[in-house]
Image (cartoon, rainbow, N blue to C red; front, side, top):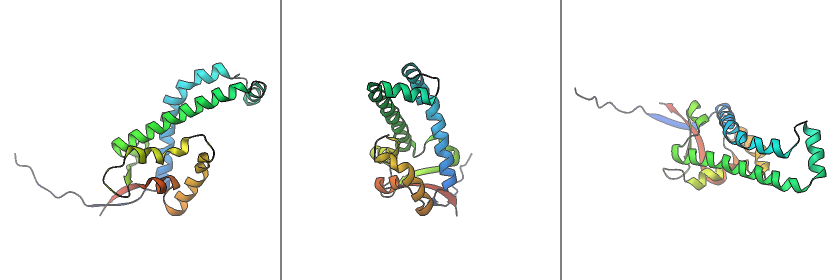
Length: 164
């Protein structure tokens, strides 16, 4: 049987729709919540009283040495989350959430996104001042310019393909 040698469909790339990006991010957070946060939940249950926020706050206030332990656990969780985003975007140019919405991560220059570019894109997950300010700056810039500050400094972009 002869194979047809048809031309590939022509496409063009544009910045990904912000609503698709937000939905993809929340799907990725659900996955990370199930995998990463559940792995640490027994630790937090053991370290903090589970009677409520105010009881936990009172306990931490009375035991300030526990703050460094909790902070270390939060940093470890953040590193695992960054590793997820960096690995998936480096290896597949997508995370699971991005796959569901057919959006991709591309370098602004070159053909393949590097692992460090992928990690830099996700640095906003680190609970360290001033990095956590990116939780405000990134969405605002994405809505205004179509790209996050993290993408500007990592020289990457999130795109979707449209047929011509």
